[in-house]
Image (spheres, rainbow, N blue to C red):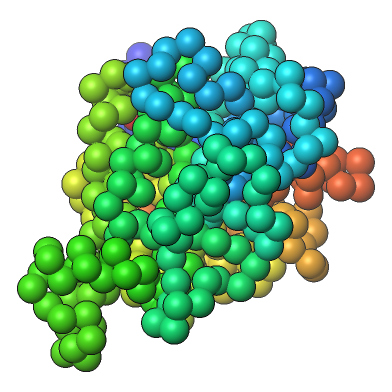
Amino acid sequence: MKKKITLLGLLVAFLLCICPLYAEEEARGVWVTIWNSTTEAEIQEIVDKVDEYNFNQIYAHIRYRGDAYYEPNREDTTYENPEPRNEYVDTVPQDLDVLQTFIDYADAKESEIEVHAWVVLYPATTANMPEDPNHIYNRKPEWMTVDQDGNSPEGDEYLEPGVPGVNEYLRDVCMDIVMNYDIDGLHFDYIRYDGTEWGYNPEALDQFEEDTGVDSDDPRGEAVWNTWRRQQINSFVEMFYREAMSHETDLQVTAAVVSFLGTDPRQGQLSGHDYWSARGFMDAVIPMVYSVDIDDMRSRYDMVAEESAPYNRHIYAGLGPYQTGMTPEILVDQVEELRDIEDNTRPEGYVFFAYAALTENDDAMFKALRDGPFSERVDPPSM
């Protein structure tokens, strides 16, 4: 009898060893937009719900369009950060440090809740031009991207990654956050071109020709041109990651990655997510696979995951509860579908866009996740 118990014990131990990692560690994150974080009371309620529903990550939106919902150069001034406070969302009081408030309330919880600073990177304006003279659009209008006809993106101005000085400026802004706030992660959004039609800023074209020796008007240079533009974003990622790790080795660096079915983001948006993972300059990529249709969602996820998985970095699935037609049952089914993946493309967690959608109808989606796949509290993945 003792021998049988021993064999049974060995079998149980073996099964525990091979069971999915989500039983012990799993990212359960939520993107919280700045429009839901306009008061201290709102932020406290967000953290309370994240804790109540067994989530463990908050992606706090603290840079929208070249403006700061935190205090630039708060104490450490190593990296110059002139960005104005609350330029676009004026419902946030000037004296509310959104990022620090999230950190304080998360730290007060007994359970582990990570706070990731969500930074919208290259978009610089909305259709409404900024008034503050320190805003990057007013300080450096020559840094904006255009198409071949000299037009700006409709409704927005974007910083041009290929213009010398742009990436260094963004590095300093992001490093200022790292140096002054006890964050768990720095999360990049819009870390891409908005499409291949952009990038024709004259300074960028001059830099391209200097770097490659290829005339920007030569149609035979299209592949070189696309590769060069993609490399400008790759260069930012590498520059920031190396700088951040030299100061804060525990920092997690993550990025939201577009995933449109039928369009490889490496080509359509000149995203280099596979390069970032391969070189070790990104700790987790989060493909935004927003779809009500489970097969469409899965196809979008697989496209990015298969490109990033071989490099032993984390992948979190970005799911879209905000979408028209989404129900609590569909959202749970999507999580379960991805959990059932048996190879190395299975996600180490899930991030949901966005908090407001999870709270609709008396927290219906939050409750469905807690009563289903998130019934047990777990820690976020270790890096």
